[in-house]
Length: 304
Image (cartoon, rainbow, N blue to C red; front, side):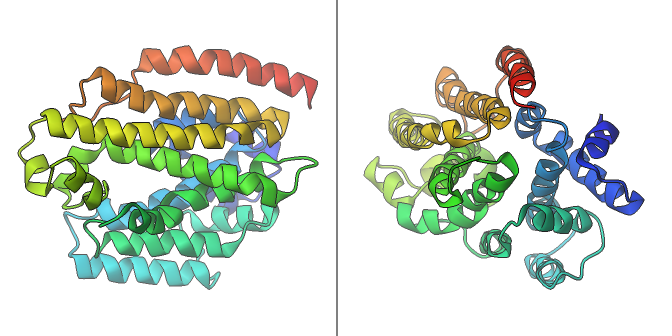
């Protein structure tokens, strides 16, 4: 499958193909929902989406997945060295050749990547956010820029990029907030909380309350509030789908359904997110993805 995608994209140089394949494996292993939506894109576009995901995942692994082997200071040093190589254009290891190639082919702004790395650095020093506005400063770099990076790859014929970008940023934010709601317990165990402290206070909850692991009335009301706000952002982002190239729309519509399904599953689980990780079932993913795939094939025939 990956070889066919690379061939379709005209990526022939062996070392570059290997870098793109590494990105694809990271996407398939760690971003199952994201990867499934990516499959609805034309084959020639998928390697570039894998590369953007690979960049984000590789940086995230330095911050979180190496926690058992590195101290916070060592992780900061490693992230700093890797960021410097990337931002100076010197990196030729791992995912970086594919990322550089994607940036050049699609004219993606380097400041978006710098903002993402800035948010990753925040994860090493910041464990909570007092206000929603404070959280949004982090989320811009961790999520909004992901949507902004995707805009040129998805294409938007006849529509200025500046018109599409606000919708793309909102979609990235909504995806991130849904993950925060799903992962409250998991993030707590890493020493972080991504729900604004002012929201916790409003519903009579604090960090110690959440760490008890009991989903009581105040916690349910807090999570219901966060879910409602996230759905408002999803609704604000949705009209942007119609501005994209027809062959890209079904991918994004499917992502809407799958990530929005995370919020549905949290509600279905009675908000029990403190001691488990709620997820969209494989059956539900298939129910969403198969119609999307059929629609995507039809769109490709109409708009080759």
